[in-house]
Image (cartoon, one colour):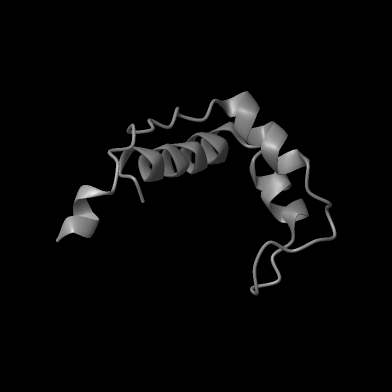
Length: 71
């Protein structure tokens, strides 16, 4: 197992939570006509959903939970 001794310990990187502003800015960079996945749901729909503060809070909570859970 000498190869394992050659692996250096890397510093643990801690992600910061998204702020509302950062999240909206990141989403707004995408073209309204492009689609992020195969479901063909365009970015325009997500941008419209995020205009509702309750929806934005919920999506932001999901994104930050993914970060916290290292998912």
